Image 1: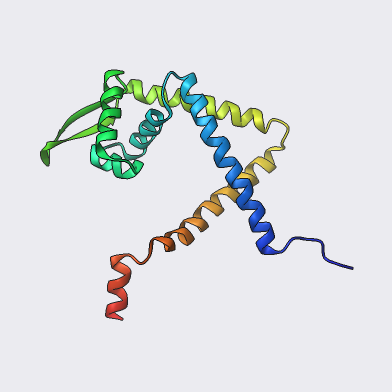
Image 2: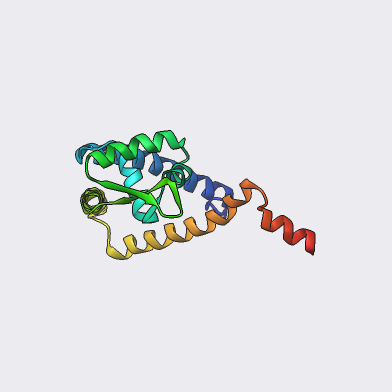
Amino acid sequence: MSDSSPSRPEASERVLDALSSLVRRSRTSAVLVSQACGMQGAQVQLLFALHREQECRVAGLATHQLVDPSVISRQVAALEKLGLVTRRSDPDDGRASLVSLTDAGREKLREVRRLHLQAVVESMQDWPVERISRLADDLADLTDASAVVYAKLSGPTPADTEAKDHA
């Protein structure tokens, strides 16, 4: 009797392929939801980054979004014009400004989130709640485990190097 179950690398490859498909679908979905909310995808991403960071400098947002500060500066200006973000002088450095969400920006994010959630709920409407919950737990576990593994790709941090030097 032969074991027909896939090997660990084969099963892992299926997960990688499924995640790649999900990421592509997610990008497309994000664009569609952004457009439905009258915004560009990059603008919505910036609003979510500000939601997570609370208040930060344009340079910090640029680092977070992996783009040049001039790109973020233009996006912030457009969002400010829409009343979704506000700027104020950085008390620690008068040359810099701190950017944060306005109430309208937080409401726009709630609208975006509602549309995404509605799509996910409809996508899994025939699934038992236990399956949905299990998937959420499994994805959270994979996210945590992969963060550790992918961090190794960036090489040792200065703290790692110092620890080795003192060992």
